[in-house]
Length: 562
Ligand SMILES: NC(=O)C1=CN([C@@H]2O[C@H](COP(=O)(O)OP(=O)(O)OC[C@H]3O[C@@H](n4cnc5c(N)ncnc54)[C@H](OP(=O)(O)O)[C@@H]3O)[C@@H](O)[C@H]2O)[C@@H](O)CC1
Ligand SMILES: [K+]
Image 1 (tube, rainbow, N blue to C red):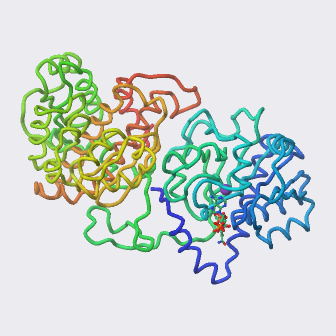
Image 2: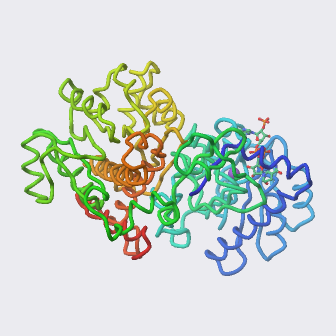
């Protein structure tokens, strides 16, 4: 599990250490210096030119102390001062070194200066850190727009996810731009939300060296796409003081608080080995397992018009290792489903989780189907048309065991129906906060699909960024619904055994964590199907059907018996 914090949480953790005289900035600067040297040496064998951009605050201070260290080596270091103020002690350190200082606070930013900065081997971005408010202004903003180094690196490949990427900074073509290293965060990213106010005044990093802990802006979209590879440096902050959160359900005792807020979380591959419930999702069944202890899911998806949604959701659930999958949707779809997968059962019976809505169009018939599912005590995944069919009154029957999987447009419609009008763009620009709002207004677990999916539930918020842009393909959402319903059924089956069949135990499960696990399985299945997860074979296109087929490989990968 990785945790990401807001600037306020970081400041609260820094304060006692700073008051005790701990040299936090010196630690940060030394680690930054080491990373800059490493990046420079992966590009040029000796010498090399480093340009360090320095803003008005402590982020600039980090950069200045690192510049002074760099200038002790046979490296050409130029420090460019862009703020109205400068960290004075850091500047004195640079003044007593070999580094060259260019002050831009009052002069225009010339073409020559822009060309000089762009021609560096390594460019260090110490303009703005966790103290930034809004898009970079003044000379910093002007320079960033002129530099135009604002395209996310590695052709949009997400590099911030919880599983190591196959693309790394040594393999990026460096011919036409410097290697950009962000100090703490890329300047232009809102550290608390991941928002990027002006995509023209941002410096896209190859590497972000972040201090103390991850910042929310480094894991939430779109900020995460500008961070490149993230290195977290331990400067001694104690952010994870153990705190038990009463009434928070499964695993609550190990949750940790900062102040009164739970940090944003991101599941990692290792959680599927260390967390007992997540381990159940991917491990070999127990020797005495039978169909019902492994979980039974029911799929209500696909219509005569969109039969594929039913086939894909069912296939994804089937390949997730349950005891049984019941397809209980339209008869015309059932025929196709059983033709493709003879294991599927088409008669009603005992079920531990439902999915409804993939491929359904909003309307009365869909609403009847979703209300029937919501009337059951089991868990349910509510997808696509089923979300859009819910009226305001219907949402009062939602619980944490109901996992809603809207994309931005569907979330905008849901929020508007709940009395908080939002457009698709509002949702895309504020995904983190609007997803939490949707959870608070409904009580349901909300999986807001996007390049970095936000999962908001009763026990907190997760962001998962494990996939590949190639998952933006027709049918991908249907596969996710199938993976999620399988995860839900598996967990309900497990909890049934430990609670002696008490269905109210379902309400104590940390559903946000289970949904985040499903989202992660889906992301990794996409990566596996694309050839981006294992080895180094390069990235290739795939269909949604192949993502469903890749799920067993991801189970093996996560269970650790590759
Ligand atoms: N405390 C420590 O010892 C440690 C701190 N650490 C480091 O410090 C960083 C945080 O430093 P920080 O708090 O000084 O904030 P920082 O991001 O440098 O900028 C604030 C300045 O920017 C200005 N400004 C704001 N918005 C702006 C905009 N849009 N466009 C232009 N200017 C803008 C703002 O001006 P103001 O609005 O106040 O006039 C103010 O002058 C942190 O990220 C980490 O790198 C680590 O070394 C660990 C130890
Ligand atoms: K920065």
